[in-house]
Length: 274
Ligand SMILES: *[C@@H]1O[C@H](CO)[C@@H](O)[C@H](O)[C@H]1NC(C)=O
Ligand SMILES: *[C@@H]1O[C@H](CO)[C@@H](O)[C@H](O)[C@H]1NC(C)=O
Ligand SMILES: [Zn+2]
View (cartoon, rainbow, N blue to C red):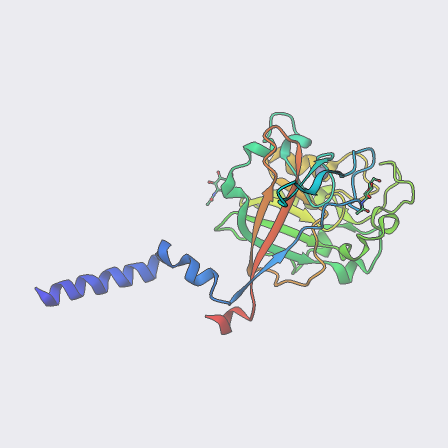
């Protein structure tokens, strides 16, 4: 009997190893082992936050900041802003009627493997750069097994503090912008990857600044793929080893929302870590 139960335990162990059982009790041991770093991919919301032209900028008003008569410090502020500014999420309904609002995007779509496609060397600071299929050879590896989010690094985050360079205009109107973006052709090609659920860029829009018809936006939105804009990609991160945690403010009917973006990445080469 003892032999048989040992065999059972052994079989369960093997089965577990084969199907990769996850012990829910161990996730914190794993995540907080020191082997991972949590990387902030959001720009701060303050007076310098970049908004889409015409959108209400982040206004932040001090309401109270004082000690009360009992010596207790109390401070509180109010803020007001357009949906589409700073590091934010575009819900599919932004460019496709009847598709998901911010509040309707399933939570499972907001925590996924992250693929980072680093094009900064190819872009080389050129605001006219439009991502075409031939730039993508050997670069893009989607994950056919799991839903995933892809973020394109055009090398634009370094210009975020200089809105004229970042937007491509000193008096931006929406019709005179210039910064890199994704062509309609690449957008269509990406949506053929059925497990793609989100697309991000380190520029103000997934469409190039010079594109006024929102062709990339429309293509992604039609497939209920959310978009992330003004992603802070100053750091170089591993291209396929991170997880992204997309936490937009849950504006239920929003077409977009400010977003706290975090990547969880291995600190060292994954082969050393395991
Ligand atoms: C932000 O702008 C407001 C309105 O112009 C101003 O009152 C406030 O002092 C500014 N805040 C900072 C931190 O510069
Ligand atoms: C991937 O996302 C789609 C769309 O939200 C969902 O229907 C599907 O269940 C997801 N698949 C996995 C494996 O999570
Ligand atoms: Zn937007």
